Amino acid sequence: MFVQGSHKALALLAAQAFLASALASYNASPPGFHLTLKPDFSPSGYKLFGAVQITDSFAANETVALIPTTIASIRTAQYGANDIIATDDEGIVSLTMREIPSGPFGLPSRSWVAQRATRGPVTFSFTASPVVVDPSVLPGPLFDIRKGPGGLTGSMWSLVPVPNPMSTTEYNITVSWDIPDIQAAAFTWADGQGSHSHSFTGTVTELLQTFFIVGEVDSLPAMSSTGRGGNGSFGMYWLQQQPPPFDTAKVSSFLETLLAYSTEFWSDESDQPYRVFIRVNEDLGSSSRTIGAGGTALLRSFTVGYYNAGGVEAGQLRTLLAHEMTHNWTPWISGTTAEQSRYNEGSAEYWSLRLLWRAGLLTSYEYLDEMNTRAYNYYTNSAVNLSDSAAQDVAWQIRDAQRIPYGRGMLHLTNIDARIRAATNGTESLDGLAQEYVRKCRITAGCGAETWFPILKDALGQEALDEWARVTTGWPLIKPDAGSLGPCFNVVLNSTNPTVWAWKAKEGVDISSAECLI
Image (cartoon, rainbow, N blue to C red; front, side):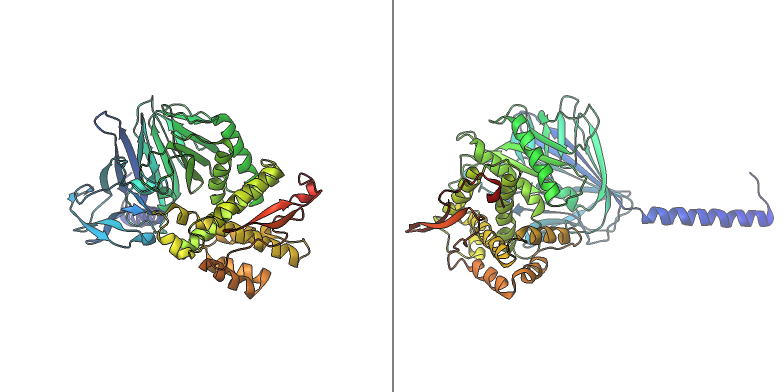
């Protein structure tokens, strides 16, 4: 349309206003973060090729990519100085690698810093190889990238470099898998057969704190059709050529039942999926277990690793899986690692068993046995008198030390519960405190002592905080309070060298009755 004079000026003003509005809308939208992953399962060596495109700019000397070199005792993808290659609209962006002794979350890290200001979207690529398992590899959380026949498992935390892992910036995040139709991939937020993508809006933490599996994958329920990502409410995944040594259908059903019960107990209204990933552990180090199974949890997911040699006992597997799932509601993330472990591991032990009992997934006799087994393991632990911090310092070198927060935290929580019940004539319990803590943690960025201690003090006074500090030192030895397992059990001394306290059913009481359930 042809426009003259004042009409032309008005049209120009209108066009400028429209452009300004469009630019404002564009600027207000979150930047994009697009991760593309393509595996290579060549016999010469498995690899995982990755590329990240960020619709954001970087100043000279600003960090473009960063990844921890180790998490606890495990090695992440060990990218070198020239392994991160970045480009923008002007071509290659030269990067300088820097070693950071204590980076985000206090972890030793490597960063790649832009030598010039960037222009337009920035893309950087990397190639990851699975960890080489040899006697030097320490046991630890299941974050590392592992290979199995026909596939890879791991965590995004160990794989994907990002500009700032602790950033609160929200991105339009897309994860794309470039795989043939005969392969499948899943990570915590979605799964799919063949090449597919999944998008969500969130921080990079919501990407990094996830597990993945890719290759020849089996799952329950079956994954969606080729080329379509799905985000159903629950999924369990393993490599086809490494079928787990247990009934996956029964385990999946058990976990879905526990998830539903736990979700209701914690008033969790999240519509996010929950995923379980299964791998084989191949650790060879002197402090490795080599039997049974272990697990590690991240956001709305966990990985369970089992050892082929020793098999997996059904009861132990059931309580292990329940423990890992319960970590979804043990959100102590501030303070030291020792402080986090004491609450998170102790709470996962306490609540997983207590809720299994209440849900009818453990009988009263099974619950009593599980609690006594954990108490016995704590009292006979060679590291029982170490403080929380001393135990944490050697947790991945000495297995006994690694187990301290589990037993200590659980036993202390049973006493807190007993004291609240006694002080309120049974009208209140630890339930209310823990539920309030989880509720508050949903609306705060950091959660730990600053949230938990006021709740505990309101219920039991300053004495409860003083005792928390004493328990942290490892001495004196915790003795379960009377009533710590409810009205149907006594606390008895089973051994004096070492001292072992246990719970025993009261004489003549049917502990399977409803009156015994707390």
